[in-house]
Length: 627
Image 1 (cartoon, rainbow, N blue to C red):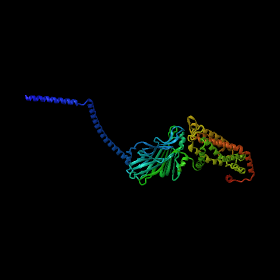
Image 2: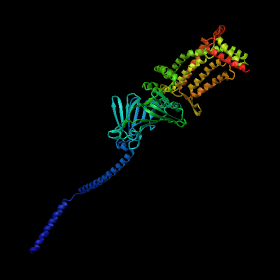
Image 3: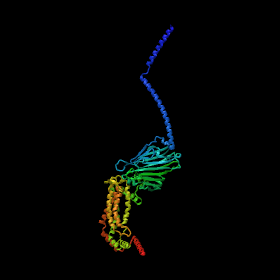
Image 4: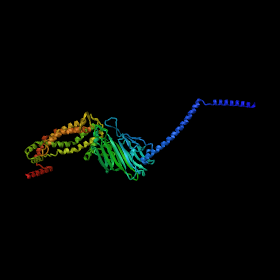
């Protein structure tokens, strides 16, 4: 009985304990929110473990990839693989700028990738398209490096580390191609306020065991020059390479050739000239030898309208004691005589002012005089005033030329008599004609000398106007750009050698030269007897009366309107001077009286006349001996 009782109590106790535990479990059971939170927590833990495993796997993969990339760069670049691992190994650019010039230098290659000349428009005034000498990869600058481990590397394909700072008002940009923290090849650019020219230096540090000291570093500069002017043919005529060599000598590559090449020694500067703008590389340490090339890119003016020339320079840089150090300069700006000349580095030779006396006249007379006049007058009026001054200075020569023509005109009847009297004896006719000249005191060559004296001035002016940067995009009357043609009508077709437009100033100049030649040719046609076996000069001069104006019309249609304006005004003034001389200064009756007076005097032969007489007498004697 006791046993059963115990068992019952035990059962009751177990039940009670079970009920209590169930109640406790129920009362302590988590809510649905707690269950969801725990579930989310577990999911976060699982996700974190997955991410950790993924990151670990990716880190291993990246490390393996970086190792492969580094090995690849090491195989390609050797020690310079260090530069490709830096944050600067991108195509980013750094800009330095002043009031007249804006330059962008690329990390890749370390060279100028964009050069903009501030304040000047392309093609037409106020077009909004600034003159950009460099843009869109039309130019590159490269050093070819021969390394100690027999690699050939090109700086244009590698990345430089930029550092921009200031020194006073100057902006300083260093671009370093690194082979290690303290091993590098450096380009140093220094841009000064209001300057088109910047300092440029190339130097190396700590590369004695990287660069092969037995081989030079080849410098290569190449540029495809953009068209910047209205007439691409006119601009291309003056786009050329100009260089200085052997201590001050200068030369150029012929702009008219399809391909021009040359090699020069001890070169101190090379200019890629584009008519009114130019890019120049100057060096304090001359290039021992430089290979220069100019390729004409305009084969068809209707199609090839973007570029004019492809210029290139190749020159070795010396490596001394395992290092390279060159101090240089870049110039990007106007091809303007006054600006270039002020640098006192012989850069004025870049301007095509003519050689010898022609260049001397332009440098020391025309440029200063025109600069003075244009300092207070508009450029069109300045050309007119300048023309008047030139013609007034040359008026004594014009006077002597006209007096000589007048004397020959007075003698014309007597010369005609001699021609008729000795028409069957040309030698005798010539002898008697020379005697007549001697008695009358007339020198038949006197009319040629004044014309020859004007030739240097004529040619100097022909070089002067195309070189005058100041005329660029300056307007006058209907001409909107005195440095280019003055189109008044666009033709729907193209005339060979003439073009697809009509320029008015060349027409006016051609008309003026026609009347000028008509005045002078009429007095000269019968001034001298025709020589036996020689062409009829009268007929030739009559033909030239019509041919010359037409040639001028065709030739100057695409030339600078400022030059055509000069010739138009010049011929008008010359016609006026000759009319004044003819009607108010030189009277034919006075000349005739003077000649008659000279005839009455004992004649004295000049050396020229004596020499001519002796030659004729010898020729006559030889002719008679043969008979």
